[in-house]
Length: 104
Image (cartoon, rainbow, N blue to C red; front, side):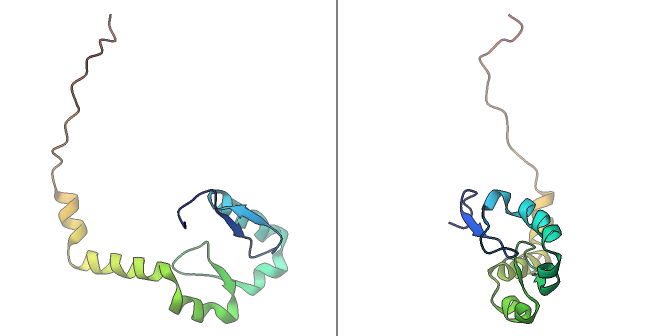
């Protein structure tokens, strides 16, 4: 599951590093400093900063990146006014009745 924060991901800077998905962004910052020569060879995906690929493979990655579809859909929704309608909607949510009396 891609959303599981406990899922292990291989570090692009050192193949022996396997990091939990929830800690991966922090690890990337640390390893970038520790492996500056490797960092020069990698490029960041414009759709997801967690995707680091070899510079030579970036255009291929961009064509296949799963996160590209999410961004494209967001752009389509914005152009259709989807977000404007949602932002202008008035909330009808009301807090449920509370039986507790904190004063007593």
